[in-house]
Image (cartoon, rainbow, N blue to C red):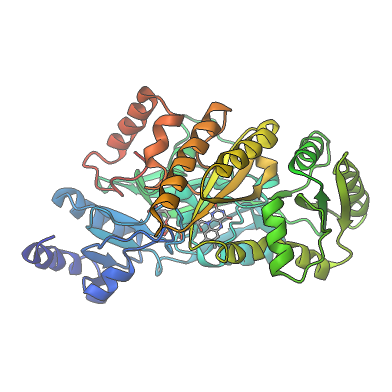
Length: 460
Ligand SMILES: Cc1cc2nc3c(=O)[nH]c(=O)nc-3n(C[C@H](O)[C@H](O)[C@H](O)COP(=O)(O)OP(=O)(O)OC[C@H]3O[C@@H](n4cnc5c(N)ncnc54)[C@H](O)[C@@H]3O)c2cc1C
């Protein structure tokens, strides 16, 4: 935006918000121009709205002036979804973060979008409930960001993703119109499901100002199980067997051989030396049932090629088991300066052959591969590690990434299980969707946002 335009728009914006919630200084604009993808672009303004009506007024103005608007949670998404590539206005939800109501009888909570995931979990935990989505970033990501990315986490196997745990939304479209989607009830067969459409739309269709989230009673007891296998094949056989029985774990995390060896080198944890793959599981129940449920799961996890299946004896040991998973990301940084971390999903029956494909692919290229993730959903974090300063490594990583995405689609999977598309996966959308399907999505975008002001340039 040119200086005279900034002055003109600033005058209009301070008539809509207090002046101290309208920023266009270089320092603030710089800070709000990045996200966890490490990309960066400068907005012209950063605004801190507090009320629904303020968002309506801002979007009405932006629609008239054709100014791009980007809603921002806390910038933790990994795909560039909150980088303002076309400048314009960043709306930060940091001051739009109240819990409006907890309703245990109807198993719901109503929140403003700037509330963190952890704050929701803590508030509803006090009433014996949980909210399904549990991203590793829970303490520093917002409900608005979770909604926009359809975020999930390890326990999506049992509780589903954000889309499965959202009852209703209040949102503002690109024309400044207020819409209410869904209902406060657990069943709703009235018309099109706009709630499920808006969840996962990455701020491109409407800006959320209120969300009604579906709660689930929190189990009173849980047991963590760690299982080590000779190789990926044994681990994936166990996964199929585990998912085919009535008692399934609420989390089922997979770590490949390199992930396991990283932990062996960089942590104090005792893991059998010959382990070529590992599964981490949580079993939930009540005081009476928990032990027998855990035994059933441990039995199903035992297949040819199993080295050991260990039930954590107490919470401290369970925390130690999970520490393994948490230690992974920092350990990856020691292998190479750059990392591409994708979150592809493949049919569970194809896990073994997919992981084998990835391993064979990188053997012919100067990149390292580490795979781990939410195996119960077939959602694997494929990490390609390389040094971007070395042209051959950067080119190899790009090449392998394309090959991996093509393989994922060929075997019936999808590009993203929980991170979204943003900028990072936009060049690959044509692999998953036909021209007609993308044209329908673009048509939907035009209905909600005819002037293309909402987070333009993302998804497609
Ligand atoms: C260490 C770490 C661990 C992570 N672990 C997981 C994980 O386990 N599972 C997982 O799914 N993700 C994970 N993530 C990714 C990230 O935390 C999620 O994508 C999260 O949902 C982003 O929330 P945010 O508040 O940071 O949103 P941002 O990154 O600020 O924004 C994300 C998107 O939401 C949109 N948005 C934000 N607020 C609104 C609103 N009010 N209305 C409309 N659109 C809005 C933005 O425009 C953008 O498109 C992790 C990230 C990190 C850094």
